[in-house]
Image (cartoon, rainbow, N blue to C red; front, side, top):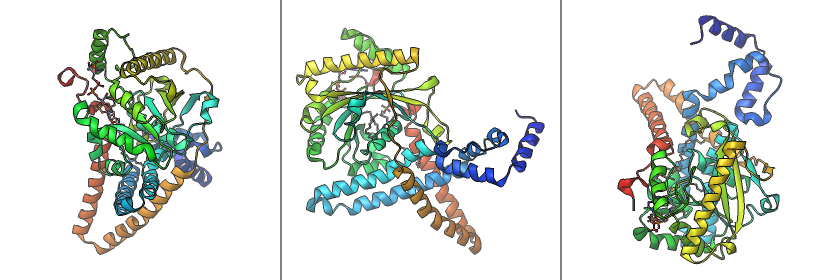
Length: 420
Ligand SMILES: CCCCC/C=C\C/C=C\CCCCCCCC(=O)SCCNC(=O)CCNC(=O)[C@H](O)C(C)(C)COP(=O)(O)OP(=O)(O)OC[C@H]1O[C@@H](n2cnc3c(N)ncnc32)[C@H](O)[C@@H]1OP(=O)(O)O
Ligand SMILES: CCCCCCCCCCCCCCCCCC(=O)OC[C@@H](O)COP(=O)(O)O
């Protein structure tokens, strides 16, 4: 606990600081570390006022209000595109990509500009030139609560964020705002019960054959998030199948990968084998990002031409198992050395996510402020209570959505009772 003397020093430092430094702090608050002002006094550094502000509930409420209300408006606009689908499907798809971008890029802005997190990319510069210019199947490990967010950031850097998709569990399609948006982006949802899924899965993949924008299709072949318990169970399966044990991954489920590769041949040029890790054993969370915590993700991307993947199901499964054995080795080496093989590349940061986020915030904060002023002036207790209830509902709803990203809320899929 800080002593009262500490608080005294802190407050003293706060009031001694010049207005210029306050402006620097404000710029830094809005822009993140990119425009970090080095002229700040040490006192302000110690105070960490910006960091303190980022942790405040009021800031979170404003962010969540912007995300949720803009999301509902975007969902509404998506519904308005429905009559266009039978007339001009490709135009409807393009519009939905832009609308999808406008929503998902807000969380990218949160990661990049609010929390200041920057992904370090390890990849072959020859392949780097192709990213964003072709369709790809992305195979990614599923260990971290913000792996989807890092994925989105990577998509944004290469201009494929609006169109990118994922093979996701059905439950995610019911998520307010995000799940509804995904419906219009032709995401593929599955119950993880092959017999029930196969028809819809194949059809959804076939639909993507004439998709008008470049897309990346994300597959978490492990099928669920990594937990120690699920790891033990899947390694028992590995043993039964005489497969080598994996230390950092669950045993991949192969059917989805094989079906995706087969149905997207001729549409997708390559598989991007992605391995994500965080420096210093960080365990990042979405709440941490909202609190402005900066994380240090490293992403290793290997491009594998689709033609090199076997067509036969058994051979393709064996190929995927081998890929996961290699990925496991990369994770192990990363733990030893702190880096992935291959040169580091930093894809240029695009301003659109920030511009879009600030645009929505200004657009939605203005009427909110007007409403609040009117409410206070009206003095109506009922209206004030209704507004407080609305803010509380938004906050609870977003908190619940954040809860869905937490590993502790992971399903029982992959555990003995639920095993197939
Ligand atoms: C960094 C770049 C990022 C780019 C990002 C791009 C786009 C981003 C866009 C959006 C982001 C949104 C993020 C949302 C993330 C949501 C992710 C999820 O929801 S993950 C869950 C859903 N996905 C999957 O499940 C995919 C993996 N699963 C499969 O592919 C499965 O094959 C299947 C299609 C679901 C079918 O599964 P099923 O179990 O029915 O069949 P299988 O043949 O695969 O498995 C049976 C087989 O498995 C053996 N078995 C039993 N127990 C286990 C176990 N615990 N582990 C492994 N294997 C097990 C069993 O013995 C059977 O074996 P066999 O076939 O030999 O008899
Ligand atoms: C400006 C931005 C403000 C952001 C405010 C916060 C918004 C909240 C956003 C919620 C986004 C929800 C995206 C959900 C993605 C969850 C991915 C995931 O991790 O799914 C788990 C499945 O793979 C496996 O499930 P399990 O079998 O482990 O169970």
